[in-house]
Amino acid sequence: IPVSCIVSGINSLDQLEEDLKLIDKEPFSPEELEQLFFEAPELGGYVCRQCMKCLPCPQGINIPGIFLAEGRYDRQMLDGKVRSASDYALRDRLAHWFGSEDQGIAEYNSMIPDVDACTDCGICNERCPYGIDIPRKLRIVKSKITEGYVW
Image (cartoon, rainbow, N blue to C red; front, side):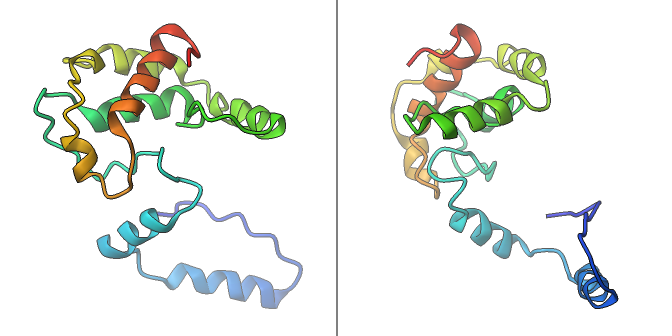
C-alpha cells in the first residue's frame, strides 16, 4: 500500500531513527497485499477489496464499481448488522467523515445495468475469495443509496 505521509509520534532520537527505517521497505508484492486483505479482520465478510475476481457477472453488473460507489457514499461502514449503540454511533460518524455521499450517489446512478439486473445466480459468490455475499451486499447498497437505511 503506497505511503505518502507518515505521522510519527516521537519522544527521542532513537524513536525517530526506528521510524525512518520504515521508509527503506519495499512495497507489498501482489501476493503479500492479497494475504493482508484476506487476513484483515476489520474488513470481514462485507468490505469489497476490489480484487475483481467476481467478474465477469453474467448480467453485466459492474460489481466492484457499485461497491466503490458505496465506499464513496459511506466508506462501506453501514452494513446492516446490529451492533452496540457505541459501535453504531462510531460507524455512522466515520461513514460520512469525508462528505462524498453525493459523489457515491452519482457513481451508483451511472451504473448500467444496475443492481436490479442481479438474478442471484451465485457465480460471483463462488469467485469471491473473501466470502462476501455479493447479491445481498448489492441489495444493501441499493437500499442505502436510493432509499435510505431500509433493512
